[in-house]
Image 1 (tube, rainbow, N blue to C red):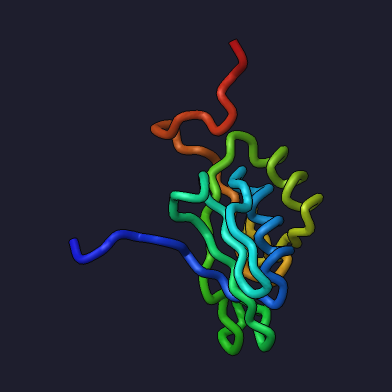
Image 2 (image 1 turned 60 degrees about the vertical axis):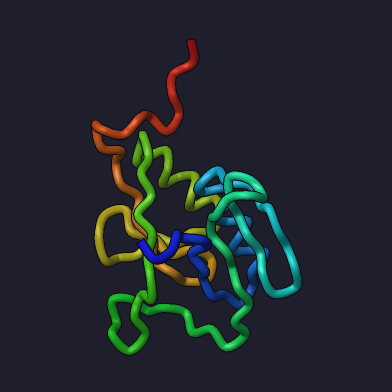
Length: 127
């Protein structure tokens, strides 16, 4: 091993807005904010996702190869229908490219996937 993952950095014209979107989607708090950089992570001592100001950012138009997806996240959820309602309420847009494929508020595609049986529940039942 040469190194260890730190942040996944995502370009956006509005770092705060996109960080707030993913904070709600992934349940991670905002742990750092500046004018051009916002981080969400478990806490201020762990790696997470950083949102970097990119004033000239071109929204993806995936699957159009002239403006590709650039990156995408697969997000596992317990209930696809409930999760879909929640991400749409956050400002996501459903894409016509497949089931449970959306664009975040900066146009980056992401997918909602049903939690595999080997993964613990996202929201464990209350005792």
